Image (cartoon, rainbow, N blue to C red; front, side):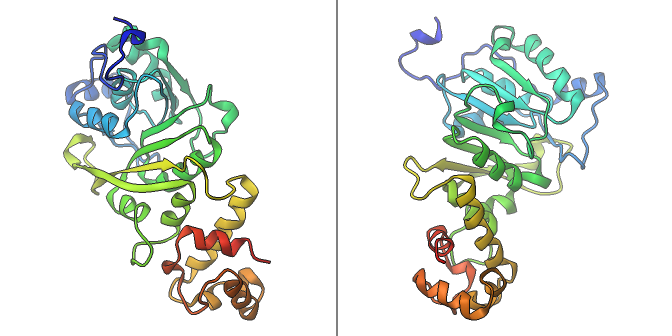
Amino acid sequence: MTDAELPSDVSAPRGQAALLGPAEVRTLAEEFGVRPTKTLGQNFVHDANTVRRIVAAAGVGRQDTVLEVGPGLGSLTLALLDVVDQVVAVEIDPKLAARLPQTVTDRAPELADRLTVVGEDAMRVTADQIPGAPTALVANLPYNVAVPVLLHLLAELPSIRTALVMVQAEVADRLAASPGGKIYGVPSVKANFFGTVKRSGAVGRAVFWPVPQVESGLVRVDRYEQAPWNQDSEHRRKVFAVIDAAFAQRRKTLRAALATWAGSPAEAERRLRAAGIDPTQRGEKLDVEAFVRLAATD
């Protein structure tokens, strides 16, 4: 039965991919001299149930082209290919990028033509380097650059409607935090600029090789169907500049914290009042809509 003949559950696995387990991950790594490095934030998932759960939580199906960042040895890649239409994998490590197509050919030969590998840095990759128009981002992001990569890709690829990423648990909490809490900050506000953000579960340490020193969590971003504000690069730059300034000195009132951004404490207060914001509040009390209003003042 072809995909076109599947009118019901288009997110069910095709059953055409042999997923990787601990033994296969170690064998691949040893065979090709791959050693996980802290510099690239590499921790490889070796549990088939975990990657299936990630794909299910992403809510992707036959209609999706998925962007994966840091595919590593291919554990998540294989699980994605078994469900979606196309996978575009961005891999900075040349050894891993060169090996991934062969791994897919060996373990999912009927799906090999659905994979495209882009040997680039996800922090700097541009839309014209990504074939097609990815509809979803699903990735085990390198923990040392997870937030910048997520924000860059959401900005660079507006075709991405959903993102389901695995990050350090503490980072997951910060991304999904609500205004008013101690962990609410720059990542929380900037992620909410693009869409709604929520935690989507935890991932145990034992499913990784090497075992990381931190806990991991899943975060889902659903881009706004109708963006409530302009999301072009110039407007985003202005809003993000206000966010950065407000949290650079988060213990200070907004009147004081935004003095440099506005030109003076008095000008900061004027602009805050123009945006309907109490100048004695702190940045952690504002939602993204308030920052958008503030950036629009002059």
